[in-house]
Image 1 (cartoon, rainbow, N blue to C red):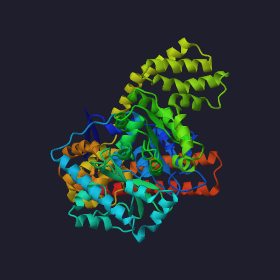
Image 2 (cartoon, rainbow, N blue to C red; image 1 turned 90 degrees about the horizontal axis):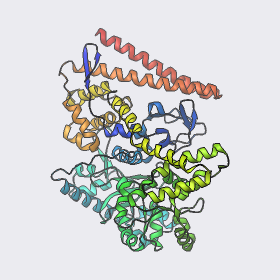
Image 3 (spheres, rainbow, N blue to C red; image 1 turned 120 degrees about the vertical axis):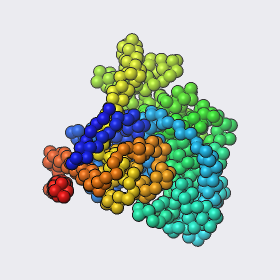
Image 4 (cartoon, rainbow, N blue to C red; image 1 turned 60 degrees about the vertical axis):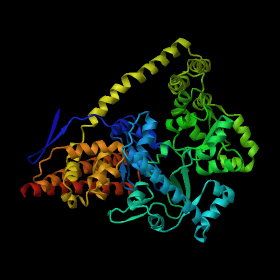
Length: 604
């Protein structure tokens, strides 16, 4: 099927193509729910508003637009994007890692990519580089320049022996110290880029160390291979922690911090305890509780559970109350199905992290672990807190929250147990609740998937101008100078935007592919093979770029108009209204400029 789009005599056609996994993840993700984990959002008409999670502010200037699957900060950031760009910015991760995080959360299975010939040797080489880097960082922790890092670790209660056990290190405040050290060892700049140890500058002319003036936490696989790094800042900058990007040997969503030191203890104790942070793993190990591991601040994934399942089917989550509630409501029943066993929750004292509990009194930690409760019991307790189950309205709320959780339990005996428990709490009829449960289970298998699939297919046909312009650029690197000032924000499609960002750094096709996550390479190939006559290239580029600029400006203008109307309704201050009106005028001025340029271009 052909979808034509014409720009001043040039027909741009988009052949229908299969929906991508990226589009599927995006369609199955509630952007407001995801962002709501990081900042409190309040419903405001068709939008949500809240304090910007990227800068400090007193008046909310951050808006989420569920119908457009986007967000925008009208305050100091003055930027926006989709759910992928939000997660990347908030967690300081690369696109591939954000995709895997959101796919796991949405229940979308990503396709497996088979190793190419020579890929095994390539991975061995990268593991060797990481091991060398970890040893170097560890030696630097002993130097005078690392005093601030050592002081911080000692203040947190770490002994010198523990720092050695976990091979903690220090990345100096220098732009090329690691790069020069590793290249002197015989490793190439290309390998260091591939391993995520150095970055390329925006101009693409220089490379520099990714980690600078940070405490380094080597992340190992179960065999003890260093696959990547976590790093903590030593000042007040944000984000406080950053990780290695997605590489051929490192995938944050599949990694477990401390698993190399914990595997034997997990087998022996026959239970794995999940915590959230690096130090929440390290301190328990220092005190002899060696069956503790961490998912490194992200939601636990099925891949991580699969790794643990080889060691034990008993899992407990020692998270703070809010995080535990989130896990219980959204994900943990899936973990139980995978383990074929119930997951438990270790209820920590309010405001206390595991490392604090253990340092204060190790016996209290042991008692909390022993008294861990099944996660579904915890979910029921959390969901019904504050409800009066003698009232019909509150009964409805409780059943609305808990029936989907119970419906997700595969084990018939456990599912019936919790259904009966909910029936006794609400006084509803068992037959009625069973019918509601069956309806939820049936809907999850049919209608919703079909509806979402239809939306996904439609969305895959929505960016012909973006794809045409990108095809021009990747097929004709000789026109790269035309796109020198083209903003990445003009590309609404995540795949197109990621390809454009990578293309700006490298126009050579093979090197461009290497920079991209596997999930996007197929789309790049589609763009490369798209048939575009090699004539009037500059005119085609100008037509497309003006069209994208117009679309971006119109969308921004609509968003600002919505916010301005909302501020007037809710009594925004004169200063806030004036600022938004000024931004609206700016968007209108941009549109007028677009029309003027287009008119000039047509006459030319």
